[in-house]
Length: 572
Image 1 (cartoon, helix red, strand yellow):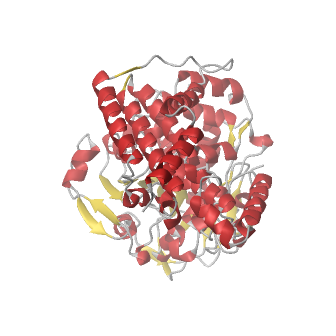
Image 2 (spheres, helix red, strand yellow):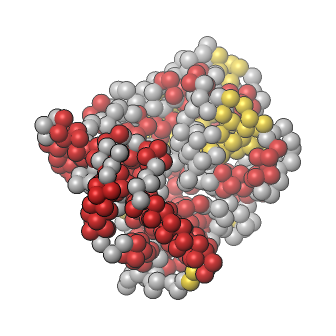
Image 3 (cartoon, one colour):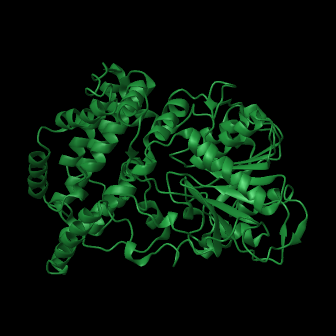
């Protein structure tokens, strides 16, 4: 039991550390939003005028004073502190200073978030203020500083300073590689222990390689299967290791499987546009798959941005009177960009114009920029957790194939990126018939009348479940919507053998406008959604025929073994 003098000393030291208290915290918290608008190339836009709900402010003040008084009176709930993963170690409650520091920090965080909720402004301004406060509070947590991290200090004493030396070594290593290590990257190699499903590159141009996979069954379905992954990441998220590879799973189910492996753009591709990625990549991949297999139609899957690219390509082909895709699978894909979740705070006319001035006529958006942005959408999990572990505790992060892939970033051509920003996130043109013109054709999603399997992840922070579900309102064909548990990646990469998580389905042919109404009528099933999708896909795959004895056909020969050269190129 801590004495009253201990608590008084702890409180005094904390106040000295915090400076002017939460007045200063508020000032620092709102400062980052000045940079979010990026009004013009000349500089950030003026901070919007905001006001607060007087009732909420009064409630916050009373609650803050009551809880502050409780802290001064030694009423710290150690169990409540430990519920926060950052302060779960016993070391945080063994010392009155660190106990008070953690408790006061959590109180300040709650109060500042309450202030954000009390803001009376438009939704985007409120979201930006909330995001800025979340970022500042995540960065200013006492767990992030050796001087206040009781657990790191205890480990330093136990290891006689070795953990600090190892932490400095880790810091120097990460500074050299240009990003915080989320896993021990030295343990992975593309083609050796990730992206290992056997296959061959059967076509390539300056934008992508097309990989055909070796059949694992004596017979395959006559209608081939093409996967289009996001070009903002490497394709092998769909082929990490044999036990969690969606690509291998599809091959095992008897599908003659092809995948687009995007090239990691360098300066020579800095002028490539959205039209190039549609015409010379997605449409070309469809045509080559048809040529190699001799199939009049194919089944196709698009993941995330790959789904947006694939759907646009199919709409362009439909405008030309061609319908080569028999069924369409969309995984965590946005076609309707009305609900983009937290990403919406970054996008407005000023920001898009700034990017257009910067990159619209050529140049590359560095892969590291995108990777950092996505990481800071979940700062405690994907940034500060590793800063503390790697540098303060001197730990080597454990091997994790998914996090290795997450660190293997890709560049984007500036014109491609700018078109995508303006026409989807900002102006949401794809859902308006004829509004978006791509490859000289007016895009109309009503032309995508083939059967569609649409998947969304319940906790997805990149493609919110409502955004994924919205595609049901725009695709006119027979549809099946499935919701999986977890987030953008973990929800998708959920093999049946793991028997993890759940998924939800509904047998109703009706799709209400609101996703919550669909969820209310859905049935939960334990385990992976993959089996549900596989059963669905078989109905559109045709009869089974003898598996091909070699890769490619005619002029399309095996160029090199999978995974090919393109996926191994690192972003510079």
